[in-house]
Length: 115
Image (tube, rainbow, N blue to C red; front, side):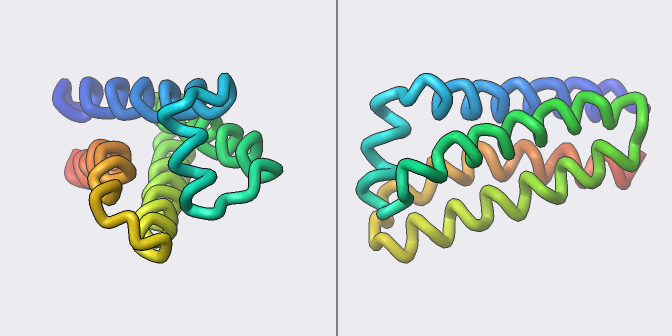
């Protein structure tokens, strides 16, 4: 396992974990856009659980690689869905926000395959 892979994975997992925490506490900067995009509030806890599970899965993947790969793939799909949701809501200026989470996870996944 390379040092770069380890650092990127830990930072990506922490970043996604922060995103999960933000949705759990219903932070204004998360809740307002979700409402604007038309995401029902009943989905919010499940979205947070998905992110938290993905973050934990990436960390577990440092010891059990298949778990990390599956978690990263799930998070790439999750954040790709978030980009689509933002685009469907025509909030084009908000597209960079889900990409801020998607890119580190995708880089971690790519580095995991390269290692």
